[in-house]
Image (cartoon, rainbow, N blue to C red; front, side):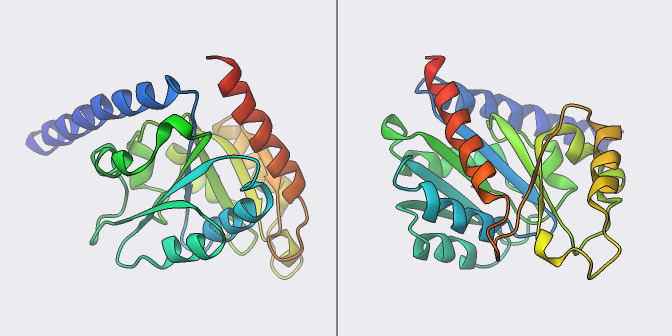
Amino acid sequence: MKKVAIEKKVLSENDKLAVKIREQLTGRGVLSLNFVSSPGSGKTSLLEKTLAAIGDQLNIALIAGDVQTENDANRLIEAGGKSVLPIVTGGSCHLDAKMISKVLPGINIDELDLLIIENVGNLVCPASYDLGEDMKIALVSTTEGHDKPLKYPGMFRRSSVMVINKIDLLGTSDFDVEEVKKNARQINANLKFFETSCRTGEGLQNWFHWLIDTVKTKKDRL
């Protein structure tokens, strides 16, 4: 019972901070996205392609979370990221709202269109932590099992979009795109799907157009 009480207190404090972050961003019409996946699904690769394609159309800031290194942050800077802030958790398996609130002052949100948070590679702990985002974007890759949504229902229940990445590798394993969608819909019938390949570029234009349109919709609500 004591352990449960402590966990509830931690999440309650996290949620209060997340509300403040969301109010800050929403008040300026900034769209905020929390990217979540297992390690190796291709979050950083997708973000590199996104920066290269629409970085001159949108003012994008990125917060890159990692357990021990700043490798992902460095990759995003090399890909053209003008505002990239790393968070090294030192062993923690997720980002939390306190971490985000500490680095947010380093971003000029008054001129921002889109804030992307690349979470630590993990489909368990990040599901419980609100970072003040508008939506979670869950990635799976065709090198994983198509039962992933059933194994980690909490994450897919809380996500708004699911990106099925590495579709250029379809056929090299038993991964079934329609099966993973069916499994995901059992958890969350409202999920929006994208199928992408960062190697061939397949499906990326649909992803870019959706991002631009979603940013515009958020701005128009001001």
